[in-house]
Image (cartoon, rainbow, N blue to C red; front, top):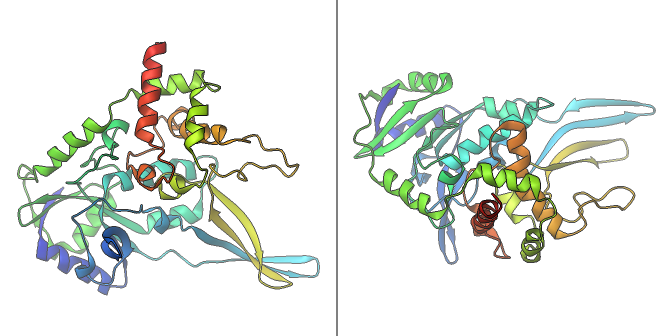
Length: 350
């Protein structure tokens, strides 16, 4: 189901959604001392949206899986312990202008959160959120979505996909949730027959991304399976600081810790906090033993989880090619470079 919406129509739509009490998340400009950047934020009006410009600096992960979220509160009374939910029902939200790499990540993490346990906290927010993506018309040297099965205009994870055209957008309603949204706010949409006049920059962006990285994911997965102790991990580990910036910037990394925080003698809260397999303490046992005692083994875990362990379990990769891990790394770790080395090594051993 394809519709058309003008620039002014989209602005009016966003303002109407906000006025209804629904949270709206969209790329917005953030002023910095050395310029500005785009990042996903909760916005208060359509004027705050910045749908075009540099690649969005953060991911959507914090809006679905906050860095720290209370799971429940506890109260002790002698030998008895009572529990109560720490948060109420998730509020309705609409994401507008999301990049393809970010919406695909939500669907990828869905599989983990519904694997051996249905994570109610994650899925309550997911079900309350309507995702409207916007096909990318910009890319940099760190983008490699096409190498992991996606692309600037890939619709995976979208309820509605926007494609830029002259004077506005084509809007494809892809899910029942997307169709319901278009029906609810139908006064802002017009029916459209085809998408032949989509922005040619989308094609140019895809071609640019394709030149950044071309690899054989199947060959890399096979190589990783057979080379757990390969000397390459020593080379990669030397450059990694173990700070975890890559994991926190990544839209698909989902490791967490659960802690009980006392708020008094008899009561407190249990929280889920972001964590990362790249820090030394992540795998320390109560005995003091650490099965991943050096950074070589920790960087190996990160790469293998994304390109061998997750694929074996779910038939997909735990990466959307957003390139954020490359952009934020203080040690110059370049995942594109690592994947090129692994691909070349796999080819040499084939």
